Amino acid sequence: MKIYLKIWRQKSPKDKGRFEMYPLDGVSPEMSFLEMLDYLNKTLIKEGKEPVVFESDCREGICGTCGLYINGRPHGNLRKTTTCELYMREFADGETITVEPWRAGAFPVVKDLVVDRHAFEKIMQAGGFITVNAGAAPDANTIPIPRDSFDKAFEAATCIGCGACVAACKNASAMLFVAAKVSHLALLPQGKPEAARRAKAMVAKMDELGFGSCTNTGACEAECPKGISIANIARLNREFLKANLKE
Amino acid sequence: MNKLFASSIGRKLLVALSGMFLILFLVVHLSINLLLIFDDSGALFNKGAHFMATNPMVGVMEPLLAVGFVVHIMYATIVTIRNYRARPNGYLKNLPSANSSWESRNMFVLGGIILFFLILHLNHFFVKMKFTGDPLLTTVIIDGVAMKNSYLLVSSLFKENFWYSIGYMIWAVFLGFHLVHGFWSAFQTVGLNNEVWIQRLQNVSIIYATIIAAGFCIIPLYFIIFF
Ligand code: HEM
Ligand code: SF4
Ligand code: FES
Image 1 (cartoon, rainbow over the protein chains, first blue to last red):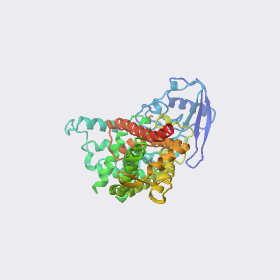
Image 2 (tube, helix red, strand yellow; image 1 turned 90 degrees about the horizontal axis):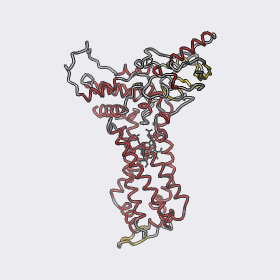
Image 3 (cartoon, rainbow over the protein chains, first blue to last red; image 1 turned 135 degrees about the vertical axis):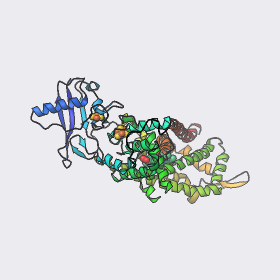
């Protein structure tokens, strides 16, 4: 198939950037979106042009580095899918595909399609952990955990930190990410003692870094490749308010 | 506490709490207004309006309501501006309708429309009833009690000003859209939500918003059709 790629090119964080059109022939429907970009880059290198910079690592939907805004949606048009799990069969022959980096004040563009997502690391460093040394994996069932809490904590823990929630949100809010991290630990006995401090520290960091606030549009949940529920945001609000009422 | 209301969640909390208060107020307001269509002599509505004008509880609630509106509008505006600034560069191609509802993305626009009509509305009724008076606000005696003929003022406007009635109905529909999202969103913001209740609260939102919008629409419709 032949496609037309409209891709954001930006040389450096300071460069103004612009869109460029790349017609690409010989694309196979079996290629993943990233393989298609690899193929484009090969073609560009052959022509002596600068390849398009994008991020990827695992290419199996677990690392969260490959986020791209494709045709107006994070990770493309499929639900619960990362860009690396998206295949060219989702696109029509002759289609123009617009590819943009995540857009958020807290995620500045580094180059082309790569954004700096250190803001997420900083939020994690502010409190997304437990301070005791947990040691090696404990024997199963030494700490009894209710099934319901376990399931919810596990679901929250599947967040891969890709940033699609921020990219999709009209407010560039990081609430779903923070909610997933706070919920994951607040639901488990090991995380409970520090739950209040954690919620406050992570929310404060999130605000400081310039993410917007949540207006419950639900865009994050709809676009999250792991389908993290906005029920976690209600839990974060609860944890945060509880923490503030305590002091 | 100061710190709480300077945080993103704290600011939203104020929008949600004031919004919930306004939600309750709308129920009371609509109930009184509906008295307009159940008695064409106007006695029922006049008694309702007289009760609202003289009851000490209402006297306490009135300034609280004003505070509620001010807090809601002020913090909603702050939140909206800050959220707008969180994305300095937008997308070339964006399909938000694929992941979120129109009303959830346009709460500020909807709020602005509500506010515009609110000011018009206060000007037409509240200011005249409370302060300036109006030739139509004659005194009537109902059950031996002298009171203002609010019914005459309100019903005349609906009967005689067709475009005001149409505008009123459009306003009610916009208010309904604000509430379809606002109702459940407020519960989410104060943390009273979970995996199961999200869907339930969204259903209640639709029911509540429909009752409010339809309820406010029925009144001008009644006067347009029957008078
Ligand atoms: C009787 C009138 C009104 C009622 C019952 C009402 C109710 C609500 C409720 C319940 C919410 C949800 C709060 C949350 O998401 O946590 C909300 C949000 C909002 N309201 Fe109102 N509202 C009214 C009037 C207004 C007016 C006059 C404005 C004018 C600017 C306004 C602007 C907003 C905005 C911008 C939001 C969204 C805030 C956000 O994005 O988080 N509302 N409203
Ligand atoms: S919550 Fe979902 S969309 Fe957001 S970072 Fe985690 S996995 Fe990505
Ligand atoms: S490359 Fe790891 S999730 Fe896509």
